[in-house]
Structures are given as structure tokens and as C-alpha cells.
Image (cartoon, rainbow, N blue to C red; front, side):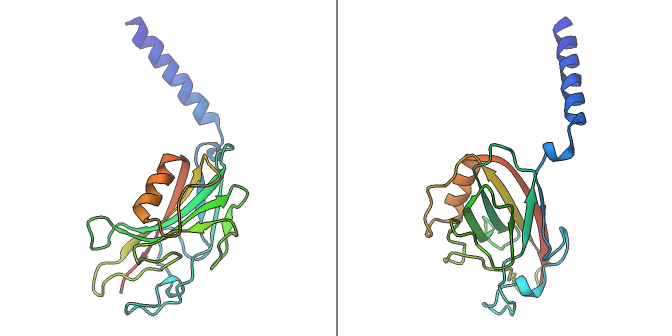
Length: 181
């Protein structure tokens, strides 16, 4: 009985310490000036191929409150609603230096690497769901990593990049935009 009481007291103390920390110490934050979290992705960021008539411009992103031990970042855009068994990778950008905390539209830091998307080519490829489908969710995630570079190539698949990212994950934050046609 005594050990349960001690564990309960310890757990309450831990919760009290966590509650006293600023929110920024508990989680990374991600924002975009290109679209609101939960909002519609503008045509500017939609694919300009496969029947879609967007401009294929990658969104602007700003993130903060990464762990102090962060050595690099990765950014992905993933469509979990794609009519496949495994979703669809639209953007995978890794090896973003730890001192970079924002991306302008159409930008890629000099040392960063864009790996293959599920379109079979690297770089940003915007939303383009099937005509008549419910709007798809496009999840943009920024990952704080414990290594400066991931051993990936431009030809690496989304699955391989995701595996490597998650193997070195310190923290992550996401926003979701919607697009349908």
C-alpha cells in the first residue's frame, strides 16, 4: 500500500512541475501564413498537373520551441486520405539546419535535401485529390531530430525517409489543411 501511495505522490509532483513549465517547454508549435490549421489550402499550393490547376508553390512555415538538443529538422506533407493502402507523400524535406525555423513559400535551405515523393520525383508536389472525393487532409509536420543529417538520397522513398526521421525524432508538430475538387 505504501509503495502505491509513494508512486501517487511522485506522479502528482511530476504533474505539478509539468504544469508550472511554460507551454513552449512542453511542445513545438507550427504555423503557416499560407493557410490556417484546419482550413482550406489555397489553389496557389495545389499541384499543376494531373488535372489540377494550381501553382504548386510550397507553403510558408514557421515553427518554434524545438528541444535544445535539436541538430536538424525535417518537413513533410502527407495525405492520409489518398486512395491507397498507405497514404501519399507530397513533400519530404530533410537535413534542414537547426538554426532554420521557417521556410518561405518556394524555399529550401541550401543544405536541405528533398527526397522522392509518391509522384516518383523529389520536391514539393501539392494536393490533387480525385475529382468528387471528400476534401482530403494534408498533414504538414515539422520534426526536430537528434542528428545533423539523415543518410538519405534524393531517390529515397517516403517510407524510408519516414523511418529515418522517426528513428531520430526528438519532437514534432503538425498542422492540417484540406483540399477537394
